[in-house]
Image (cartoon, rainbow over all chains, first blue to last red; front, side):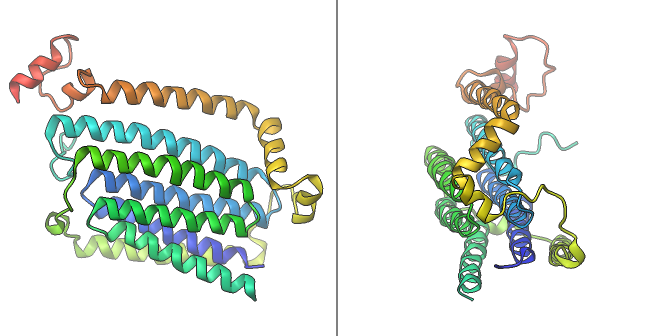
Amino acid sequence: MVPVEHYMVLATLVFFCGLAGVMFRKNLIMVLMSIELMLNAVNIVFVAASRELADLDGQVMVIFIITVAACEAAVGLAMVIALFRKYGTVNTGFLRMLRG
Amino acid sequence: MISYALFYLIAAFILLCSMMVVVSRNPVTSAIFLVTDLFFISALFAKMNAHFLAAIQILLYAGAIVVLFVFVIMLLNLKAEELKGARMTVPEIGVLIVSAIGFVVIAALLGADGATTGGDGRWTDEAITAAGGNTFAVAMRLFVNFVWPFELASVLILLAIVASVVIARKDSLVSSGVGSTAPAQGKGEKGKVAHGTR
């Protein structure tokens, strides 16, 4: 059986791929996709820990995380559409109304 | 041995696809790589004997969420992103790499000295098989121990549906009022004022 640290390291690397996307991509849709990537990294950790600890609660948590991710994607994409309709762009460099 | 080889194969593909999601210039390419990535993560779940999660990973993530992304990309008719404006500065890259290394070290140390303890430890692979398989065991856990969070999740989904419809509607106050400099007081006037001043 592959030790749990290997799964944790893999999940960490995937999480930081997603974090780099959130930090450096300027397209709002790309930012949302990167967030999905980060949530998936967390899912890997939950399942690996569930297997390591022989406890099924981790797998139940993943079901809830997927639910929340679906809601987040739906609302986030609705906001992207609303912003695009108003400003004609989804570039985060232009959308800086909330910056003081 | 086979188990290790399979894990490293899947892990290599997951990492490759994750990087391609982030670095592809075209959003559609990114979405395709995201689907591939989710398939390999699903394979990893199946390898960890989480068969039910492997199934809903494909059904929900690849089948629903990424399709939603692709639909929105298609609606907005986005061009490939120009990476000129997205220059990363050296300090930002440095912070990211250093924190990544730190977290990898922490993750690698997790198994040392029994750092992973807790959990009830009842659900070994043999116990799950004896209880009727992974899907049955997870379902029992979900509908017996987590039934109220499950019901709350349905309320959350209802809220998300209503919010999406309200935000994305054409004459929505939210979509016409975002970023307006006018103070938000008149309910009906707000959208018109915002359009006028812009």
